[in-house]
Image 1: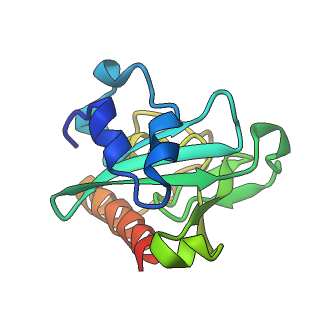
Image 2 (image 1 turned 180 degrees about the vertical axis):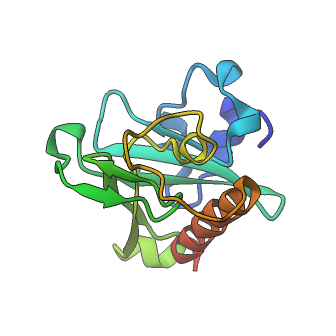
Length: 163
């Protein structure tokens, strides 16, 4: 993924108003992010732990989502699997809910997916971050195929938000 600017991220949100996108926190350390290892940029709001965000390039355009999720204090300590990167964690996967884009979202409709609570899926897939013993299932897929699967799963989730 290419390096992103704060302004690019703010204008890419598809499921919140322009005012909400203007006020939400964007990471201050964008220049230090490992962009070559990221399929998407994901972050939690440090002031509101029940809010998370992600941004990715999809079909040549930047798309960003605002998400709601349980705060870290309410994470259950059972083993769960991320629906994007297929990493298992004990207490590290949360149901992330996105308000749908457009009229459906204005009517209160939403969709959700179980995602790594720290939104570090690309780093888990590449082995750059460790989720603990047994976190990565033994698979015959190549790294490139695992990355493609993660991107396809993320694309499918975004499609449910924007449909």
